[in-house]
Image (cartoon, rainbow, N blue to C red; front, side, top):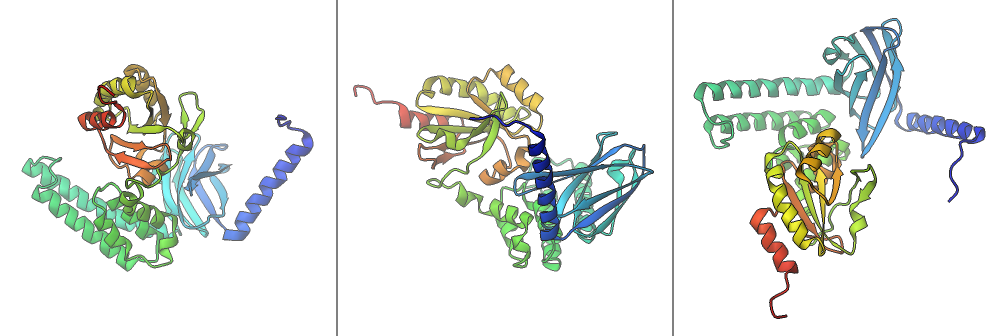
Length: 369
């Protein structure tokens, strides 16, 4: 295959192609602008990033005379992250195709004031009430000395009931909004119980259900069906230890054991020695593929080396907030999935002795045969 050579003509063509793409986005979606008045040093880079349908979109500008301006052309109202080159602080808010005003300082970037962004103001009002409920729950819990892990204690039950009521009322009263979908994500996406999320989802308008965040909620609700035995395992492409992209589809024709874990997950790390034994015994019959949910590449690679894991190791830096975790309904680790040679799910959530028994039944030949 002929290698690409960056000739002047090709560079010019690529430049104009990029301009054309940006112009097309602006024409298709309309557009807006983020204007900022920030105390800070000239030349400080101001970057905006948002993720949409599995892709990152990034743009940047520089601070000059304590001001900056960023043009935006968003496909819909989306969560955006503003960052700067002077420190590690960020500001996350809902952006829309209007004129949004940002004020503050680079030194206190996390506390920037966002004005003229109605969806963001709406969502902030929900979060303020949600945080208030959370604070009251923690105080009651501390005063009673109840176990934080006990989901049956009356303080937790009361807190969940109040939070559920707050979320349902918010969604009902703002059924057309992006903020309603994000409120559901805040309240329900970490909950293994999907019925409450399904109840809230029904309150959204038909238009709102087409939004990217509403679709994420729907995917969460439908996960149990999506990863049901006999269904195709959701495909993904992640980088391995050498930063080479690996797709689940690459393993068609082979059985695959998917192990979702993280360096910060004690039960996962405790299971690794046992997985090493199983991989040594059944590695010829089934491919072991571990998918780390570590946001830190350094932490992931260190854990792999310390635990001496020798099979395929992949990493999803978006952790349990990413598309892979969403597609498998992973909100707690460890999680496992066995896929057959046709790419169909055979079993999920097997660990320890249950996993060993399952693999033995699949691959151990009866004696005398």
